[in-house]
Length: 143
Image (cartoon, rainbow, N blue to C red; front, side, top):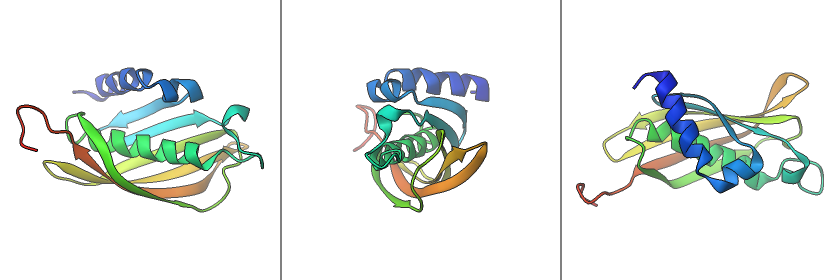
């Protein structure tokens, strides 16, 4: 599948996720093993100190990791685990989560993600995540 069709398919999947739609997430780039997801830093997703809530930063990482792994495992996937390190408060205009597959086998992919906040046009790293994406069992595949 070419990258334009892959991106269109990914955007269609994102549109089926009510939470992604609610927070205005946008899939900006998708290619085999790579993903870029954007989330506007609206007031609705900030916590009491004005930072984008850690749960939303975590969401961006999780979704980007899953897209990156899903492109390597034929889409029917879930996150089986992930870890996130917050390195600075998420203050700015927009979150950008960039994920890539580090390893992909038949049933799982290990992916990394860097999450940035755009501040005055400059990207500042606010979190780093790593996760394992697992292929979902189907009636035709062993569990």
